[in-house]
Length: 477
Image (cartoon, rainbow, N blue to C red; front, side, top):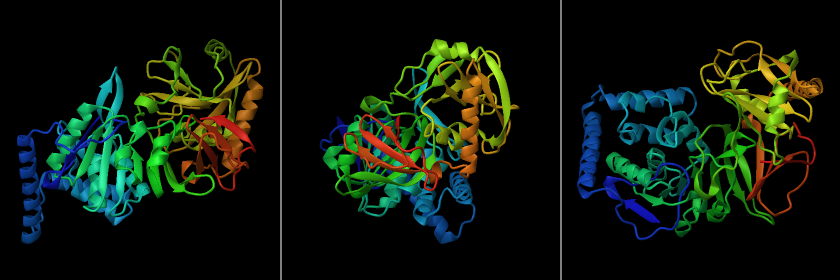
């Protein structure tokens, strides 16, 4: 295990992908030659001098990087991604292009994620989309003086933003499983002149106990579960923010620690999101299973899904009925897809790659990975199928049909159609209205009109206020 502390005007260091850490030894400069630190210091002083000169002379024509950064911030404000002056100041201050040195400056300030590392053809690290970063920083509600643990530091940009907000009286600790990403983030933070940031190489599932407790713990990588170490290292009244897997959907959930007879984490806010997944001890047990010809199926319940039987049912298409409810592409993972996952244990998602042979229903526009929702039974299944290619923005609704497959497909289709109607009748709830309480595994959770998701280290109790789910519904996460 190793830790880095790049202090003073030279900035801090960080790690890149997702899952990290062990114990912190004595701080030392990690992977940053003294010449590089000296250059970083010069870059920082030059940047500050330029800003001071512009302020004193009333210069109105900023350098290109400043102009691009200002445009990005204006867009984040206009889209209401940035809502507070603290987050706005951080985005205006920290230069994102220094954390993406191999990318054109123009791309660094576009509102898009940038993939930065692959393993066996799978993306394992990225620079997150600025919109999503702003949303999560607002969810995190940082204050000056806060102590923060970040799991999965990517390029180091998010740690720099957080360090700007918590200020010199606070502390940001970032942990990552990949040494090369930690080294790269250290160089980026040094170049940007960020405040003191501690970097650790290790497994994020175990946190950084040597520097605990933390007022905030934030994951910038998707996690299937809430690890026990994160409960233990969170300060009383602290907040945990993580992209949490809820039966296949990924939600950015801000959870406040509530002490009592039984400790629990209570959600403050929730947003739909998509992050690369945690690696190491906390790796996601979920995963799609290949079906055939560019098709795969994603089911999250513990029972074994008979893939041969499912493929045979899909070979027996039956009648379809146009639904009175319209869906949008986002309903694959949020909206109706999320609702269905908490009301029907026998739901799954059929995932379709661009090279799938033949035409398969997809709620997503053509040309990219897509998929749709289905319910399955012993002798039949039903799926949601657009009545035309959904070549529209992701949040634009379009007509869909419920299509039956197999001998008992019509009965399953009727139930799927009823669930569509129930979701629409409840006001088309989404992740933003969902309420979640998390308890450690092994404790007895209060019962009521809520769904209980069982995971390895936690139990999640979920409901939409005013729209109860079936009493006593126990699901696997």
